[in-house]
Image (cartoon, rainbow, N blue to C red; front, side, top):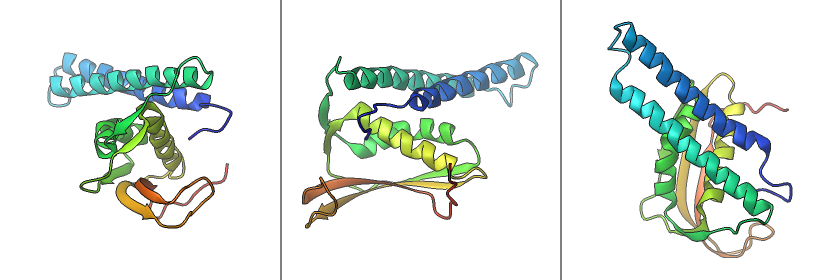
Length: 180
């Protein structure tokens, strides 16, 4: 998650890019339909891009809520979450955020243990990982989001207690990471 600095401004800009990109696609598809190119501009395709923009708009609202949490104006709302469902709900937005040059696949463990977390915080963390992965693959590639049940017997890192955890792994096989 975030350190004491709070959510960075690029989080909001990433969401705005998804919204603007999908609205631009919808406008382009409508222009094609006006020109009579109905094969390229189906009503379902336009509706899908608008729905993606709407979901991203909701994510922007959630980011504002996280900013309020950070500024201590609103409380976190942890609850029992199905991580696989959360990832499935975000797949279309993730694919559009990554663009056409990056292939996205999900490998979701059956019977994944529920987690107790704030949904908005978890969505933001996943979106940040995905955007960082995209930035590491300027020429395209593939991204895998994997979930699994893991049990830590010994403390593996500072602040991680032994116990049962649901793991989310975002990997980019073969990606060459750039230094910024």
